[in-house]
Image (cartoon, rainbow, N blue to C red; front, top):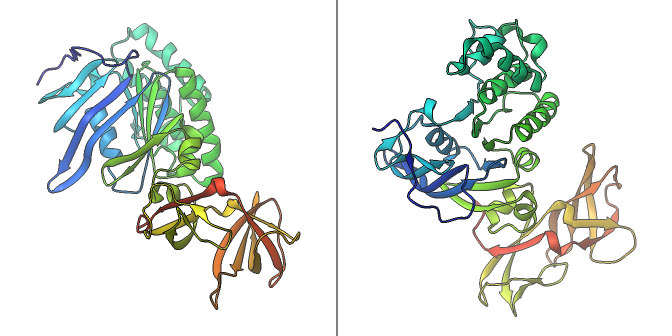
Length: 366
């Protein structure tokens, strides 16, 4: 094992990534947790790893931090290999700040001492000033003398973030940092966290299973499933142009229709939907986001009979039965902005926003 990172022999891109994974694979016994991962995070960028539990997200984070021994591939930070071919730099030499899911604050140390703990390489006379600046950046300076047990969950999270940022790391790693907070507090704390990260200009890799959280925090999102990245892109790209049915449903509820490709499309009650790339006669799933169904009384489009409706705050969810030639009809959900609560049994016309309608090979949703 070598402690000093080895300079990369060459760079294949004009811009050196702040954090880069190349062909990284990792196993736990017979379980392939990470499968040939290629991923890069740029300086100042917030990248989220999004996927269900057990897909390998946290393993990627631990490999970047040096908490797991790399088995295959290479990891580089700011153009320098930190793990490859049996070589692994220790966590403390990687220039990485890490915020754990449980924050991992030292209970016997004050807030200030928790933050100064990561400044052992800084002259003692300067440590307190730097720690107080870091606490000020996250709005926790006035709590410097308190101990972790005296703080709320949101306050502990901000202290953990200050400790991760105080040494000026080039990379910050966040492992489900908001999962322990209630919904009301979560929105406020993640907004504060995002601003602190943007101010730091560190490259950030964050793990989450919450699609809305990933869209709020990230410049780019990498969707993982069973150890592999299925698609990487901006929140807009992944939401509006999902590459697979799995990616589409990960970003929210979808209505699912079944059909068969004929003449390049699939028949639906809203007209044929293009099925680009699918062969003639192939079985297909048509996925329609609830917000893609627009309800009105103007008589345009097929009719839908209201089963029930619910006010959800910023939007309303309407359950519909839409005629499709069967006895029961299609049970679909439509999401309308604001308060929209039609009466049970009311007939409404339904029009479709095709930009939020996707056709994929059947069987892509599990």
